[in-house]
Image (cartoon, rainbow, N blue to C red; front, side):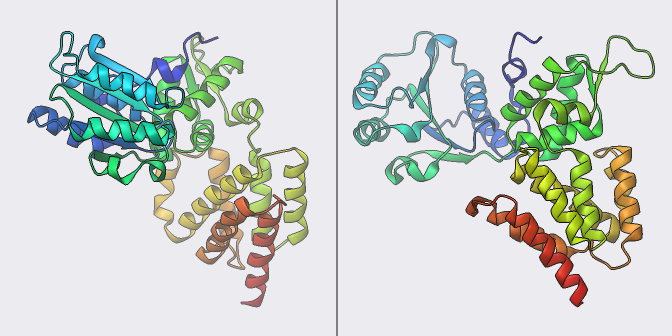
Length: 358
């Protein structure tokens, strides 16, 4: 078992360790080197993209000690009295640093009166104070606050970035992720480092692992099947069956596959996403076969072989960009339907119907 949460254990501690946010890191590093630090920053992005970690690193880079670093959760300290207390505190000089840094997380949760009190502080801040506001919902932050901050937008981590991180972390924990397991966990992470490491932690904690053929007893191997079993993610065989039904123009087989996925109480949106991910690879193999070698790093041998044969046998030309567009179109409807199977069924009927008419 792992006593310390992986996302805490492997949280970046320097700018060099920050992944996927180079556009932000470069600017902040430059401002530190040139000694041109703003009095207020606004970090925007979804959960688990590194906003708080980068804020802490930035504070450390400008020489702020733990005695002069204050972290406030606006979700539980959202009232005007809390901000008034903060305003009184900012007037006090730093304990042993040049600056006092206030990191206010979930800042969009502040009350209307609290916003007004914070605005007054941002309008006339003491020279020794720096505010770093962090939010997942920029639309809830008043324009008067935004206009007084340097705004940085944190991007969701790409699957490629997440996969590399997951493989590295697993290796440090003396586990080995195969290509398929790293791919699936990265998809489950949905662009969040924290979520991806949370899923990895579940797998490492509860998987028995398998020893590699080389006999290296210290390293445990994690397969995609392990990840599917532990996380409840849709099984590869169901994803493959649906794509094969499309290629074979077999509506009955496709609908039966959707029914099986629903009967297993799978996350249908995730199931749809995995289908799109794999269908995309099939399209690339069809139109750019020379890229197959690069894909071998991200797919299991079995998956690559399945897709290669699928493209070869697709005489009807179903596996084309038009079909992928339909899948993406119907995926957007997942949020708006109370029948979770319906978008997949409609995509199946539309793709096969259009291929028969062409």
